[in-house]
Length: 131
Image 1 (cartoon, rainbow, N blue to C red):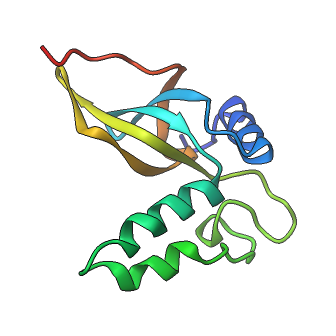
Image 2 (cartoon, one colour):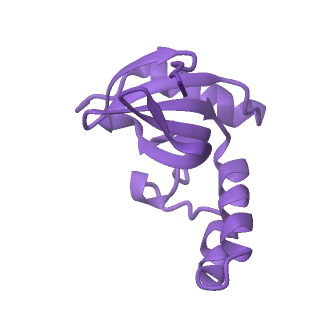
């Protein structure tokens, strides 16, 4: 979306302000369907940092995700600029990319999606079949 959906921005801002990870959402980004729960950026960063820290090869990258986002004012500088701009990203926790009747990864992943790249969305998880 060249002009991000204001309703989606408001949902993301509410997740950020409430520090909750209970809002389920399904989005279409570049033709891929991603379904899962939204998490506040700080929670998402913390979880990614933990996973990386436990890896022998990727441990050094843990600190990047554990650091606070910078407040420089643009979308590349985290979700909010120095003047409290609205969120520019959705942070998915326990999310899956749906491909046919399979969800990848099976255990759920951590995805960061630019709100401006979302072409369609709906509230709730889209189910898939493991059979």
